Amino acid sequence: MTVWQTSPITRQRDMHRLGLWRGETLCQRLAHWTESTPDHIAVIDPANREALTGTAPQRLSYLQLNELADIFANALLDLGLERGDRCMVQLPNVVELMALYCAASKLGVVISPIPVQYGHHEVTTLGAVLQPKAFLAAASFNGRSLADVGLSILPARQVLAVDDSFVLEAVAGHSSALRQRIDAYQSRYPLDANNILTVCWTSGTTGTPKGVPRSHNMWLASADMTAQGCDYRDGETLLNPFPMVNMSALGGFVFPGIDRGCRIVLHHPLDLGVYLSQIQHEAVQFTIAPPALLNKLALEPDLWARFDFQHLRGIGSGSAPLSPAMIETFEQRYGISIYNIYGSNEGIALIASPKTTPDREARASLFRLSESAQARGFSSRVIDVETGEPVQEIGAQGELCFSGPTVFDGYLDHDGAGVFCANGDFRTGDVVEISSADGLSYRIAGRCKELINRGGMKISPVELDLLLEAFPGLAEAAVCADPDPVLGERICACIVCQPEVTPPTLDEVIAYLRAKDIAVFKLPERLLVLDALPRNPLGKVLRHELTAQLQDTAC
Image (tube, rainbow, N blue to C red; front, side):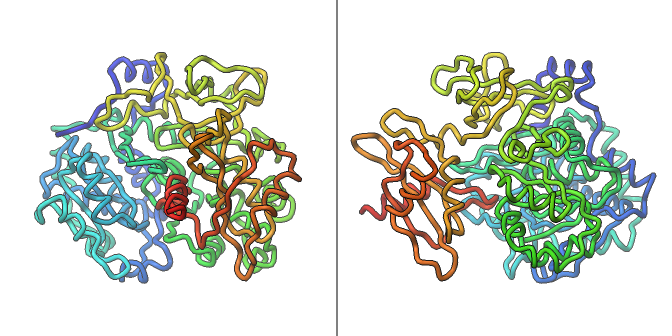
């Protein structure tokens, strides 16, 4: 079974005619920098790589990255892969994973990355959908072989354990025979930017993840959005702390970084001390960080002052509304610009920057489809979650629908039901509140499936999350639905306390929220104290697991 082009021919023609798709591939951008700046450093391993894989960290130039990509391309050919064949990959953030994206690009092979936390169950589940022809994984990661997991879905001859022999060969240089083999292959299968390059997976916050096929054109359109929205400059140094398996890392660093000849510093797993040290020692100019990490740094200026961040110009964040106080601290006290990023594997792309949204209060939680984005083929609208009718009034809530050159064409092997509107707009599944008269400014309110239905009143959990996170002594907080036979659902507040802090009572939590003057029907009626909130490998809170814990507690 193969998948290599999902976009209808009509869409391909329209996107190219309007100049919204560039018609370039990832490996062509790599070749450009290999030729023009071969010695410029392209990618740097995590400083703690030896602890992760037992092998020394590497720093690869663009020439060496290209050679490593050639080595992996030949390895894929040896496994029998050709254009459209699917390859599942499970590697931490190491230089080999960067090279594998480029290698797949050279062959038209579809690469499907999965988090290193996934085990037999997840690999088997996703493998049944993907039907990969090969499985490439770390020979050693934290003392175990990830490649062994691939044996649960494929025979040994189709499983390749990735060790440091590949990168050491690239560093040493290789013969032109590998390049000749790839040239001969590409004469049969010419490079085509319409080809699907990746199948990433939705985060699975409410159920089984779905595969998201994306072409070179879609990825490079996302790269343009990131680079323009976050003011990337050619050749600058970027620090990527997120797993290279989804939009945060791929759309934020891999594609825009290679597209603009940047130096990409890798990080794994998220460790505050290592992260700050990398920013200093690698003279990082831009990075992305989770909101919780930025909040911590804003509250601990002494920690920030231990390092020299003279080169750092900006930090992006997202996945949850940001704290205006945090933004003010970073920009006023630290001199670092904060960018609020709203995106998804499917191709949503909105960025609130100091340039587009100077007001920090607005930038913390509002996104706007700018005139420049509209000129680049993006459009958005809001519809009623239940009826599908357009919603336009300021303050009204509904599901955000989005279209543009970054947006995918549909989930892998999915019938498309409920994914797109009749006019082709992608139904994001995100509930937003309209915040401007023209209907193009939005405040993210939550997920459609996460809305709590209390006796017919729809309640966004995100609003309550933010209020509770500011409760004194709490480290984390989230609300979830508590099934109720009368109202359908009630609200439960799930909290994690800071060390040596006595948990508040439900009455104390309610009193705190009442002081915020929220509607009475939004007040929680149950409290669950936890050691940690359940999260998926990408850090998103799993509200359905919180609800499940409530039911177990009730039993």
